[in-house]
Amino acid sequence: MTAESQRDGAGLPTSVAQRADRQQFLMKTHAVLKTLVRLKYFSWEIEGARHLPRQGPVVYAMNHAGWFALDTIMVGCSVAESIGVSRAPYFAAVDASLAAPVFGSYLKRIGGLPASLFRHPQRLPAEFESYGICPEGVLGNCKPFWEAYRMREWNRGFVRLAMALKAVIVPVAVFGGEECLPVAWTVKVLEPLIGSIVGLPLAPVPLPARWKIIFHEPEQLTTPSGPSRRSSDQCNTIAQRLRGVVQKTLEREAARRPLAQLSSFVAAIHRARERTDAPDPLDPLL
Image 1 (cartoon, rainbow, N blue to C red):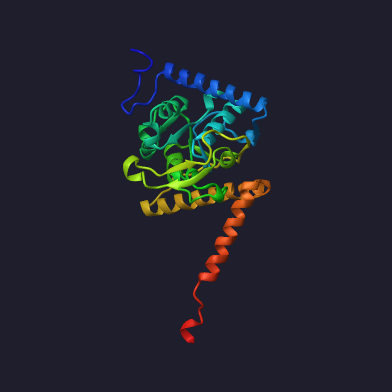
Image 2 (cartoon, rainbow, N blue to C red):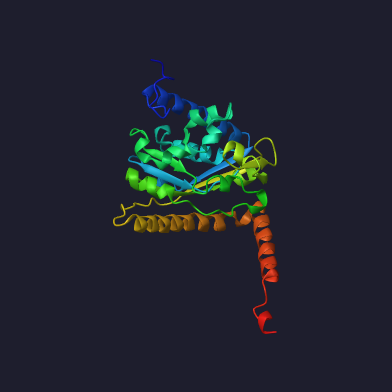
């Protein structure tokens, strides 16, 4: 049986050879990244590496931006750089993107797993311990450049995953994706055909960017008890609290980035328009 054929029923690479191939491929990507840094096309800074778990299950929850999943790859390379490639996370990818020619094959080799699979944690291979999730989903990486560093709401699925795996959650703030792979417009017309919205690239290739990955202190969860409704409420609370941790870091660190300043300016205009368009509460009395 070849390494390519040694997969489980869900099509996941579970053999030792497949995992070794993935690690080698990730190290090649890591080498390309280091070359771009050496050429000063990218800068790359890692903060909070002391928070990275050296063993045991872990879920990395991060903000998401850019028309290509380079931000998740940067997080994987940052983990590999800090504590070794064997701990680099597998990450959830939109099912449609994994089915795309060339692009999908690359995502699979570097560790992309179908996002739909994460709804059933029991189907994930027991030998996989490290996962990366973007709780904003495609709404995050398909937002236009003038909304840079303004996160969408976080889905609670990553909390459920961590509870099922008895994993810690490490919130991650990622800087650079907004500038490196800016989205010109959110395209919704293709959603009925491919099952997802897409971001229309502002530029066809990655642009020079200052990447910075900040790992926060791990969150140890307790499995919720009681009715499922109570569990859902608890997961929502945890998801929003961890989103707040990342948002606070984004607001602090991105303030000096021109694209974030543009985003804040556009947001201020929208707020002003909403106040202007709001009905006067005294109108019914006049």
